[in-house]
Amino acid sequence: MSRDEARAAAERAARSSYGKLVALIARADGDLASAEDALGGAFEEALRRWPETGVPENPEGWLLTVARNRRRDMWKSAAARTSAPLEDDSARFDPLADHDPYAIGDTRLELLFVCAHPAIEESARTPLMLQTVLGFEAADIARAYAMPAATMAQRLVRAKRRIKQARIPFAVPDRRAMPSRLPPVLEAIYGCEAILWREGDGEAQYLAVTLAALLGDEAEAWGLAALTTLTLSRRRATGFVPLEDQDPGDWDATLIDEGEAYLRRARPDGPPGRFQLEAAIQAVHCDRRRTGVTDWAALETLYAALLTVAPSLGARVAAATVRGRIDGPEAGLAALPAEAESFQPYWAARADLLARAGRDTGDAYERAASLADDPLVAAFLRARA
Amino acid sequence: MRYTLLFHYHEATSEELGAEAMEQGRQAMSSYAATLQAAGVLVGAEVLHRSDLSTTVQVRDGVAQVQDGPFADTKEQLGGTAVIDVADLDAAIDWAKQAPAAQWGTVEVRPGATYTVEGVWTPNK
Image (cartoon, rainbow over the protein chains, first blue to last red):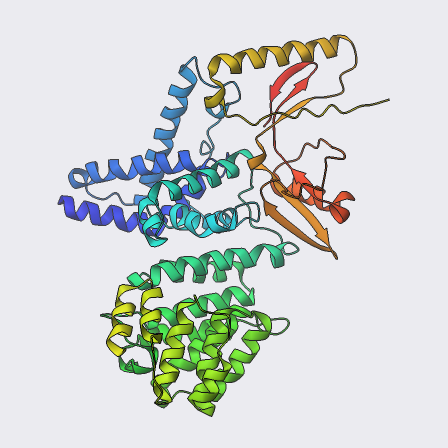
């Protein structure tokens, strides 16, 4: 077996089981940092040994065993040092002592609720999920946030220290607590999706679907599963093409069917929540594949509902664009929110509506381009100016 | 008559203080606890983790708001303390939500770092 094959096998194991293994190693004492160290060491060892020995029958079990041994070695050396802090008694117990490495349950769910715990700083939740559940490097996460690597690393270290020392439990909240605990988890997964989508990466979608399936009947979780699946069905192959100019033949029909099925599984007790409405909006767009036209009236109804449950600047701008299609670009311009001068979608929508109205677009395209964080989007807008 | 002594001090890290100062502090706290214990006046004492490990809980109109970090509202002053021993932060937050002060003020949930048992400092776990 070649080094490349071993690397590919280790990477596959990493992607599919990283969060599960981290959660399993860390759940007893809440020490994510040391779990990640041990697991990172196990992956290195896999890359070294698998080319000679072949990929083991159960790569997850192999990685877990090696990580466990590495962690035990770390404790031993810490206990051997006379300078070991008095309060550190982690050497006394092995969280995996009784665990059968060949029967790994899904512990990722618990880890999701740890990462998006209300006691964790809001801005750290998505980065923490990207790192501990999905296994992305702190440096890559920092780049996605256009933030210095050291700042992001510090934020992650602080959050992990808090998880360990304030003892945030590795547990799925009970039904009573779910209404307050689930929304931040969905928000954080949605944050992962927004960052990974551009790379065409389906990890956040996988996470959303796993969460919905494990929770069973949480309507908003199915809404997010549907939203991320439908969005993924339109992942771009090359360059940037606005939604309306995309050829539905390029979309992934299997993912669209899957997303629609998830949306049907969302059966809310009350009015549909934000993610179900956003998924329904995506479903309307995707339906152009079947009908050949966009149902603007359906979109207007859905945006009106979205604005009542989750009024955001983005939804107001999008609703104005829809209005422009139904009642003409002048009506769309009048419906644009006023206080959105630094909001990129505002300038993109304004430029488009001005162009459709046959009016001078002024510097609208340039302003939209300069606010775009995606160079492909910026290039597209500048070409239209 | 029972009093709670609230120790306020600059929150320095162990790196800032240095090993020597940390050790001196630890010894001073040990002998202080032992002295109080010997005098028969000690109910319990606790050294808390730094305030950046705090979680705050407020209940407004029956809705609990749980946030990371210590409260920043300087109009609120420390008015009481309770020491509880529970499994994890979620259990502590549940008790904090039931505290009367959560209705009119803010309850800060701070993990203890070390506390006395029979006058001897013991790590929290």
